[in-house]
Length: 73
Image 1 (cartoon, one colour):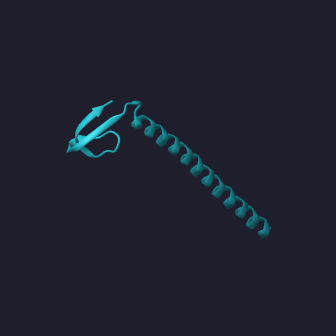
Image 2: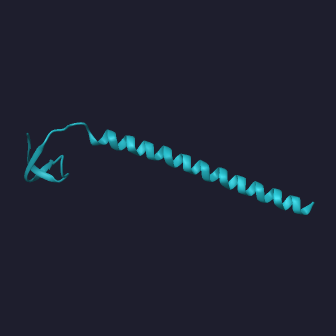
Image 3: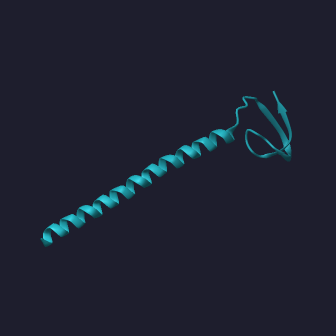
């Protein structure tokens, strides 16, 4: 009888740990999907070519540094 209780409790522990692991894996997939969507929205859809000149206060779209002038080709 005692052996059955030990086996049953071991089985229950493995089952609970398996469920926790699977739940964490599913949440990881959702968060990866959300991060991919955010990245796609943040990247923009413009296909323009920019030329950035000088040092100033404007953000260059291509290299994300401060420049004086931005020329759109």
